Amino acid sequence: MATPLLLGAHTSTAKGLHLCFERAQEIGATAVQIFTRNQRQWKARPVTAEEVTLFRRTRERVGMAQVISHASYLLNLANPDSGKRQLCVDALVAEYERCTLLGIEQLVLHPGAHLQSGLEVGVGHIAQTLDAVLEQVDHNIGPRLVLENVAGQGTTIGSTVAELGMILERCVHGAELGICIDTAHAFAAGYDFRHADGLEGLLAEVQDAVGFSRLSMLHLNDSQAVLASRRDRHARIGEGEIGLVAMRQVVHHPRLRNLPMILETPAGMEGWAREIDLLRVPL
Image (cartoon, rainbow, N blue to C red; front, side, top):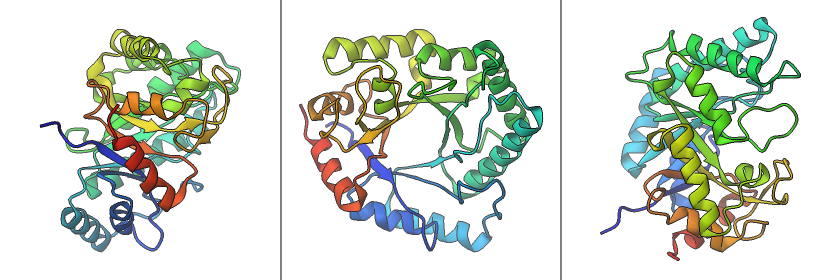
């Protein structure tokens, strides 16, 4: 018997971190992604012991298989300004420690943009920043840090799996890191996986550039933007340029189906429930 799919969405934690689990239950999710704090601010208060207990007990009660935190969008690990990179280190260490207390398995983040300093310099800054974080935390008990691919807008780094591989290779603590493939970002960056050959090509690049064991999770998003547009525009599943058949092909691929898969589509709660039902249907 096949293992149940780990499908979910990025749900709200409004009025309490633990409420993400009840919202996830409403949409039939078996995995969930959250912000553990206001992602538009650099500083965040620590989680309280009461919040940690309530979060863990609620998770146990609903039986949520996988929980992921998305780091703040303010972070730019490739920033050429060392002072701003230190802000990233401090914020990411604090987020890592929150995730450790809450028992969250993965912490996903965007690598950053080099801001005209160049790809090589930017990759070096990202690696240095990640190493600085991992040297301050206990990665034996904390979440796995996971780098997400990007659509390729501006000077962002990580639009190809090879660029993510460059970062991992430069990190002293690279063995502790994973990657996340966002389907909309990959499509906008030029990966056409609407047919089986294209998906197999993407997976072969993952194997060659980072090793398949480093692929930790997927973000499932259709794309408003056309192939290779380098524009990050998410669409509802089956309503974008990728299409439902191709998204089901990703979800049910034998090398991918055991990974946690998170919707970040502009569908809302009712729409996510429908999308999860659509994606569970085998090819």
